[in-house]
Image (cartoon, rainbow, N blue to C red; front, side, top):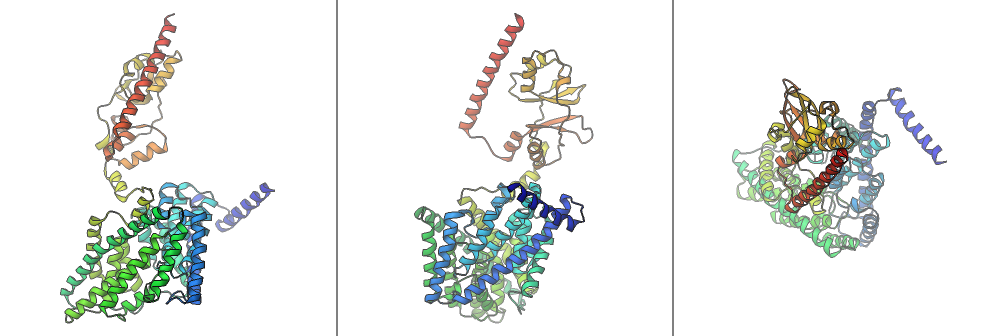
Length: 607
């Protein structure tokens, strides 16, 4: 019965693909088809999640000062969502973006479909409760899960599955914001961690398809409309610089606040995570009685600030402090929810506050307060997310306004540069580190790509002449402490052989054989001008311990040898002293054991 179901499933799966691809199934074509499908599904998912949250929020009134109905619904929604998270799927807590990064780096892009479905449900329940978080991060995680599931379901390679995870992430951002360019840049900058990755083309396709699909379902969607700002006076750039400086210091402070409270919650409520979620919701209900503007993602509040409908600097200052507090409490509790819109809202409030003061003090040279809010959005996003390119393009794409691009770039660059010095890593990287997960940083790949083989390779090489017998070679190199040797014939590279292989051949009584006849001839080679990243890839792919380095002019001329240990050592890591002593002790034991075996073999041969 089960076998029949599997056969039916395979038949449906491949017949659909065959029909789409005209019976010419190749992984490349299947991958392209799944890229398009991921984009379409991402658009649908984004619209369904957004409309569900909006409907429930409006119906129960959780977007304003809570009454009894809003409180009861929110409490039930948080309890259901929290129970799913704490009892069934602890991996789906928070925004979901760190989880996507972990799956991409550690689990070859395979995100379980059960997690994706759970994220879908908990996102709708949590975010419709009025909690002070946004929907964009969860949408990214859900759409990434859709892409991963499609790649796994159609048995694509690990590389393709990882690509589809990233493709789904991009589709989620594009559909949620209607910003396909931002989706591409964010995915490459934050999720993939490489703006030059080969998956760029597929990410662009998915982003456009997702945005088009979402707009087809809900109509044209521009979050912030009718914004027309101009730089009134060149001296005004000084105030925009102040916006950038303020974001540079306050952004990292907010990240540290989230991390500190999150750590406190994990220790205090270690086995009662649901309790802290309910407590956090009750605090939101309390805050809503006086400051309902800080509930939810805050899109409407951002619009009011950008339209200069909130011009009192005291009001903006209080709202910023309350949003700072509310988003810190909400996110540190582990409730499902994203940081995109809350971060943009805090930036808008901070920028609007500075703009209002500047306008009061210097009205003759300052422009609309909304312009400062707009610049604050980008600068604060850069300080928190550490994605400067994304922050600039996101604000532009959301507003469709070129006029403010110069102040925006100045503030973003200043904010990003200073924030990076104050506190290392983005909020997502810090969250992963706190959970004990150490993701590869951009600097890691950049260093590996920059450093060349010739900088790390061993140039003083111990080689074996191909004309030596195994017995002669083994006695010559057995005390060298080296595990593998290039074999040269007439001065050129002939093959490679390990000390273990020599020992095994010798132990079998074949010591009279020539090394040139028993060495490995089919070699994987590398060139001195290639990067360490290429060497790492080859060592891992072919499961070998060393690579001969040969000349570009003559690939038979040996110029060096590179091992994983050489790469790691050059890269800057070192074995701890206790580990080093353990390795030395283990080697000495193995060496003594090998000596004893050799002595026994020699005695047998003599007899």
